[in-house]
Image 1 (cartoon, one colour):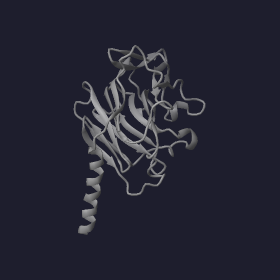
Image 2 (cartoon, one colour):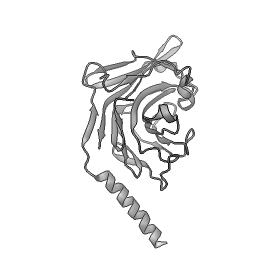
Image 3 (cartoon, one colour):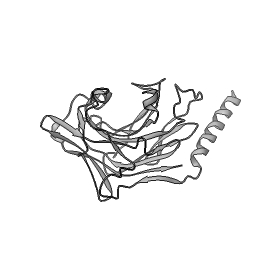
Image 4 (tube, one colour):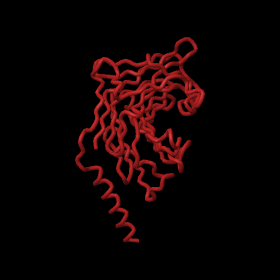
Length: 254
């Protein structure tokens, strides 16, 4: 029994020692230009049809290239209601900026209101070859307006996807006020989720088979603001629009 406890603490010591190693800033997006840097970003537009209608979650928004603005060193992703249509924006670094391991952090201000679902997340760059969930998914920040003060951090794999067990839901007092940082520390051993520098959840399985741990390959970054859907909720408060998901920066250290 003592040997098992010792090995457990030894594993945790090694795991967190990897996190504490000095890292260099390898990519920073500070949104200091007049528009998105298309050397780093792609737009995803439409409603996901015909291959992924509702983007796989019965979401109600249509993504456009017009629902964003870069000004004063910030990116504004806007959700609007135009007549009977909800519009928003979704951008990715697929094929342009992809990363394996490191600290990946965003500083952002959340939009507020029932029906909104802002997210900062990552997908395996091999998604076109192996599909989802085999590519893996890392949800660094998810917030749904129907549940004020809660932040969701999750992982999706072949072993655990859909209503995943590799997740954490936490009340973070004051999270809707001002800007906050959301990050992961990602190594060969595990993924630690942090909010404002505080550790909230760590996934570090002993088995590293592909169904449990597809996180040993390049991943790309996604920013979006969804409306409604299976996770965002069936109800949308139309009185809240327009709303803005405001991003200050993204930093990647390795």
